[in-house]
Length: 124
Image (cartoon, rainbow, N blue to C red; front, side, top):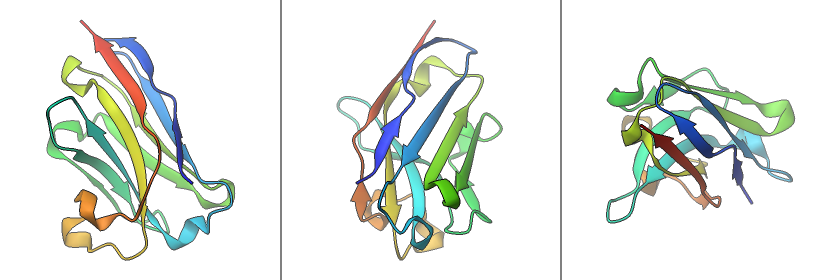
């Protein structure tokens, strides 16, 4: 089971650090992705990281503001979110995939296991 945490209320320009933990998981067998969703919209891939952590991916409008990292020894993936904007407001989910097609690495259908979301609210 994946567990996302770290969401909260922050002002525009502020920062949050999301964590995805997976106790009991063979963590380094999986690529990990972060996704977000707002009411009435489809789930959107935000960032992902390969099993080793060597490769990462981001959607265009978070590049330079968000940084994904992982610590396989601690079974944890983090998403550092800086310079937050109101449009970053969403429920954020982490997910694990064991056979990601890296060409579509931010597609939700690539991921097998999902955690509960954590709400991020950016106020103006």
